[in-house]
Length: 327
View 1 (tube, helix red, strand yellow):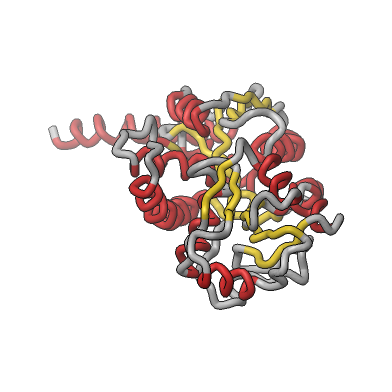
View 2 (cartoon, rainbow, N blue to C red):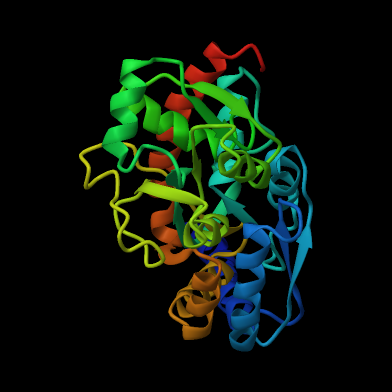
């Protein structure tokens, strides 16, 4: 009886393991859909298409990017979480999505999905924000800005691409780390924010390297600090907040996930391919051409990174929601 029971348990297990190996060995046999939760033409799209151009040579099948934008990434994120977990639907995800999740939680709402609904594949890019001012600003260093802002709390204007957004959040992290108060002036995106800074309608902003670099090179704006732990190749003379003794680091990232129940052999295969892509010269050149840098975080370490970032964002988001009448 015991032998019969043992056989009834072990046999299906062996079959599952055998099928798992087979699935991993054969995958993929057709094209793979990558759901981008943001509109076409943005950073998510660029990283996804850069990844596709390199990865499909290794995988031997096309990777097709499909945009499902809306609700700050929630629509696309949910579509990935609910997709059939067979390895043929992957999701592009990012700090933007994490911020939106933390905003939902801070507002007392139940988010449509959580990170536990995914099998993490990898993080590819690192894009710390820059603290920037108009080129004619009297502030030559970050210390200058901090000094004057402390002397006049709430006087100077901080511009952002929108309340709770990815240019507002890093500015608030900086302000809280330095003990400062600013007037927040939200715009409808990063482009209008930079235009306002060039036009001297705001005093400073925190923006990402790609769209900022041409304006810095054109001497329209000045970068005072990088909100990261390393200097950027495109801004070698700009110090980091860490160098300046300020715990105000913030970096945007873009990575990929699969639905949570995707077979382990397929997840392993995707992680292996992701590492190869991250080390590929063409991929690195593509990412750096956009002003970002490749900073690879493998799937098995992605969970710990997300937990750290979630706690950091949640702390600030709770404070922002309490302070703002907009929920």
